Length: 254
Image (cartoon, rainbow, N blue to C red):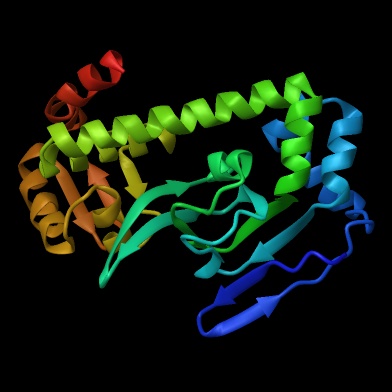
């Protein structure tokens, strides 16, 4: 039986065929071992999961999954960034952007249900692909793996709940201010950061139209924020943190 993931790159459809019995190369296994799921399970479980898995390097804008498709694989981001997005008629919005060690829609794999969102790479990415059937079997057989997987799903749920609260309770200006504060912390606290994807992705990620994002950046100038393309400089971090302060209280209440 051959594994045939269907991946779209622009208008090109690629089909990769690989027999489950072909083992991953040693360097691929070493990279896959970075995944927290594998680190938490028994050695024999990790071997079982990797036996049918493979690691692929995809360019930016590669379509990994489409909303409504069967969840045949667990995709784990080892490097790069993956956008989860949803579409309705002629509208599209970003749900979340995933980074290293994040799983793509883990719950669909566990429940053997179709993907509720689509997924595509935002930049060149390294993706570990594990057959969903293998994941479900390992969850039943290995308590350590099940515990790690449960923590990941719980973390994803908490993140989604927080995003929903942000959308419902915070203004667009407050959401942008909080994103900048959090991004600065994640990138070393230098007060100089780079928006890691297109601004239209950031706008959708924060639940606003691109023109609203532009106006919000302009409004943040009085809080010491300067923008030059994708480069952002925060000259008055305390003022920006104060604007985003209500967000901290929201997080504490979660």
